[in-house]
Length: 300
Image (tube, rainbow, N blue to C red; front, side, top):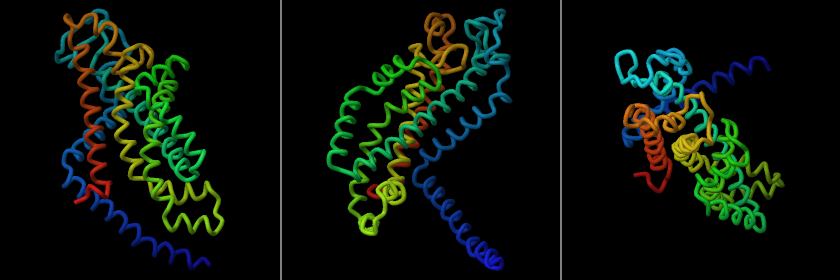
């Protein structure tokens, strides 16, 4: 028995190495065919690194007030200037990236996962279950995402957790419809019919045989909605329904004094706005490139 363990490990070694080579080859092919998507992916990785290392890279405490440096223009000491409280704008943007990425990734992951499960279950069970789920999804989709998120935040209240819940809930019906379309074809495949024939449980078929086969649309929708989640977080924070002061957040930096003193200190609004623009653009470009790479109908 013991002698069989090294043999199994040795047998798995070449397989693992082959998988890694295949992954590297796919990444190289993706970068070659979709250079803009690869550049967007690198930009997102750099942004994540900046957010993770903000406490090392930020030259000032993002919460520390410096009333002697109020409305300071961009300079060698303060690269992006200072705000109405004398806080360093560059440091707050670095820490604001943490807030944006945390809420964006959490909301997109939760919303996409729940939407994928509901979409696959709706396609698998069909009948009344499918009819009820689709009508509920139609009702939710009839509202713009920001209106639906505003209503949920108004009910739950502001705060990071409630903001994640509101954004994730707004994404569920849109992701559910896309995943359901793929799951309808998978439901009729031979291996799903074989699993039914041997008496496999419904949820085992859904989680083991159907959900792994909708990974491509799931990943595409997840990446596409990341940019929307960050934009929604900024919009709700701008309206005063997102994260609360003094938490560094890009949308929060655009509201209040940034609007009031835009002519006197335009850098208070320009730099957070540029951070939102480039981040959302990078996620959208990456999502489009992943869709082209993973959709078999669009492959050359």
